[in-house]
Length: 180
Image 1: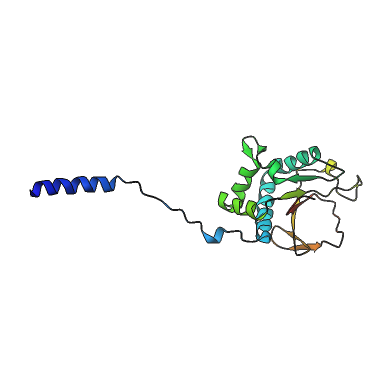
Image 2: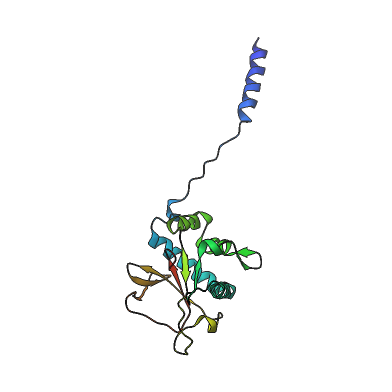
């Protein structure tokens, strides 16, 4: 009789050990982007770093902005460009994931900014101001976002008041919460 209990115990142990183990992934709260301002800052930092490493990213912004120009407004909606190839086999979204830290962080940015757009201010062709057609993509672009009516750089530095009419002769990619 003890032999039957032993076999029963072995079979029960084998059965229990073969059950699937459920793994629950818990996101690191440090990676969360909980406000629109944090989302814009993280995105600005990732874009600045990516554009510093890959001039192809700036060429992509230039080309797609010219293609999508409406009434002299050069703007790109994130949802329309995220799956387009920037590098040979890499989409814009995949490139952002490399620089933003993880797909989870990018998903938080996308959640915070569902109508995310990029605006490239371009002025009438004049040597004093920036015009998209004369954009030399080998030069770094300034990546800005707006926080409480201030232009901010990727590192959170203030670049001026949005009411000041600041004009530059360099390329600026302005991160917007929604399209113009």
